[in-house]
Image 1 (cartoon, each protein chain N blue to C red):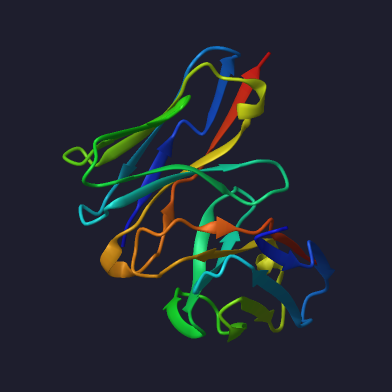
Image 2: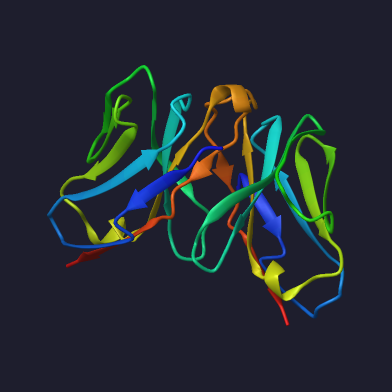
Length: 113
Length: 114
């Protein structure tokens, strides 16, 4: 089955700096790659997603890139703010396998004011 | 209004007991899920239902039995609870089950088995 690895597991940045989280996946049939943000005591919330027919997608301060050949995708957060502090998860799914998401292990991001 | 709501938020019980967690979504979605998040924050799918029909059933002990009375509700019943069942259980929903549909998660039920 699909395996998703995520790095780093923790990331500390100064407010205003950029944060980058990287994920790799194992199954070349994966074609959907969402990113979720989980705040303390809450459920994961979708922040951005990308499909395999797109190489890059941006939404304000958040961008995601996908390299299908290398089977890796990344989340970029620019101009980080204290409210960006949370745990971030990448995930991958294969359309043929139903809407089954395989998650990475998570990255705890701390933005220091 | 909460889109995906779970009850209870916290559940503390003893080994061997039977407990249920309820989930309801008001998004009009036709697919619902249960995910388990362990102490290391790892998220893993347990079940998914589409219009009350079981779609995904991962390798989960048969002590766990999901029930979907209608497409807006998916409950999780757990028999003979064990220490290893302690985790946060998340309900989620999506529009469609054929892949690439964003999931909307509830805020979780923290289950502690003593």
